[in-house]
Image (cartoon, rainbow, N blue to C red; front, top):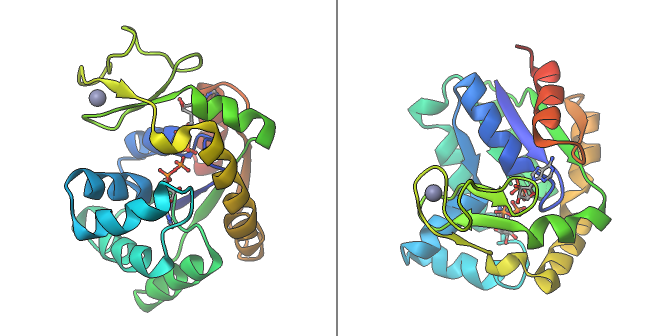
Length: 214
Ligand code: ADP
Ligand code: ADP
Ligand code: ZN
């Protein structure tokens, strides 16, 4: 099962992608996580990506596409995968389609998690990420059992620099301009599925399971 998660920054793509990966035993591939790991490890890719990410801009397509195509060709992806944060532009979607076509493969579902802009800043300012394992929480909607400490690994929690309100507004603008057109792209491809992202995390997941099957 090959799945793409679509939605504004903070819509809940990562939260749902992790649940999908667990239930259906497929890898969760987050381009944001890949870039953040590269930044942490001080790689050349990380240094290049950081200048864009800090400004709330997209990393150029040529730095993203090959990375994802290589990743989905790895052995653990034979039964599928859930892509979170990729594609984010029409050229990225076209490049992915082309690469998959050459392998005789295709994406099965593009799931759009719908959350209005008004809710997004609130979502992002409350988001906390574990510095060690990358787990994501929300101070009000998905709190840890001990404040400031990751439930999964005991690591410390931070507010991502790009989740501060100024950068979030910039990212939302970029989303509407460059990523939202993918909704029409995947509607035309006949694989778009919409879910309401404003309801409780587990209820959103139940809607997704209805689409993907038990
Ligand atoms: P969120 O989950 O909040 O939408 P991500 O972790 O997916 O954020 O992405 C963080 C940043 O990483 C983006 O703002 C962008 O700069 C960069 N990024 C991630 N994926 C892509 C991509 N497919 N194309 C270009 N830039 C990307
Ligand atoms: P994305 O990957 O789309 O940027 P995340 O999955 O990281 O979004 O979610 C953004 C923030 O909102 C996180 O703090 C997460 O815990 C929280 N969140 C995710 N889904 C919901 C939901 N359905 N209701 C309330 N908060 C949510
Ligand atoms: Zn952790």
